[in-house]
Image 1: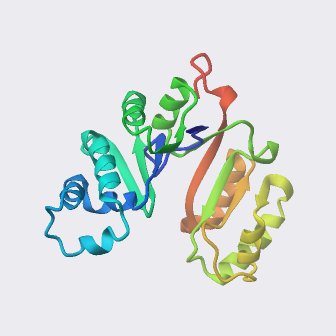
Image 2: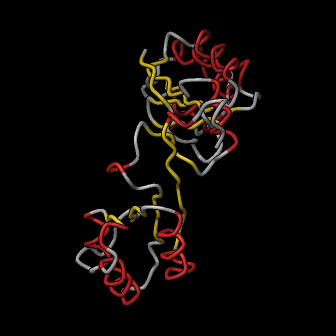
Length: 226
């Protein structure tokens, strides 16, 4: 099992992600534990089960579902796809209980590296923890809406380029702004500081999708509150 550091909240809410792997376990997120156990015990009359559970091992899936059952109605979120079943958690103590119960299938746990980081993330859902600022100087990451018109994209790129290193544009985003790429997922650029962010925000208006602020780990401690 690997342990990794959380940089930002998952789905703007969850600081901890527990990744489990078992063939077809992702379907449990769709049908729920009770229906999964009914299928594993040959007691289900749902016709769609043959599609959800094709090629699945009933004994393995049943064991997995039983291990997860005590946590299904806790304050968590689950997402599943294929052999992957991911559990998102707020509370560190609950996370450790789930990990202990399901250690047979847990492959990766992504979590804050300290209590201070956990509390910080939960209180600041638009901030991203980092070891150092992107490229050593950019405090904000600005995401653009993909429905932004071509004319506005071209004009905005021209505007950005006037300000030198106040902004840093991802290569794919630059191509998208110039209409050399018709579509990309989550076009973004970096803004150096609050003033730079305010300037581009005024220019872009409602073409901003979201903004993330980077906070170095060294600043997150009880003696130096953000």
